[in-house]
Image (cartoon, rainbow, N blue to C red):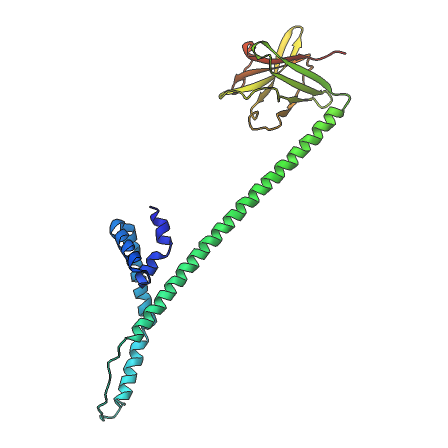
Length: 269
């Protein structure tokens, strides 16, 4: 049972006010005996109502006393008195009015508190949605910029395209490099590579062939989270070939040839 939600439902205030049905009263009484938290809340509500009643009914005792004195002609400076018939009222309306005012005030405070909580919750939800929307807009802008850049690269006649074919046990894999020599960068299209295992990353290599010298261009740490699988990588080398290996997180100083996924030679024509 969610005791907090039950307490905040307002049923305990109705129980104290005597506004529940007999069945509901029995259910609340059973829960009071079962859960000390509910008992404490009922006692707190009763204490609050009593305090409010006292505050609400404070001025009535003086008013009643003055009325009785006037009826009995107990004016200051006189000893005259007379006997009148005073009927005992059936109900103490002043007391009931005080209780009613206290209960109304208590429910008003409870309603205001709940409204404030709801308003705070709505504001938090709106703030969260706004933040998410701003992130999505920024991501869309970034993606659009990347798309425009890639289109300009693909249309540039000076861009060198290098297909990377699958190797050995990874013959079904593939990738493609678009090399912008003027800007010293490559765009790697790695859509043909599978998701790397946990603890592993793809590492990109620039190679010269005579002698065979691999130079690391870095690891693709965001491969899993990037939807397009197109990565811009700085390349300051006079590459004659490009390759991709699977390495431990953080990368390796030299390529692990047993984990060579793709390899491609730069065309000289």
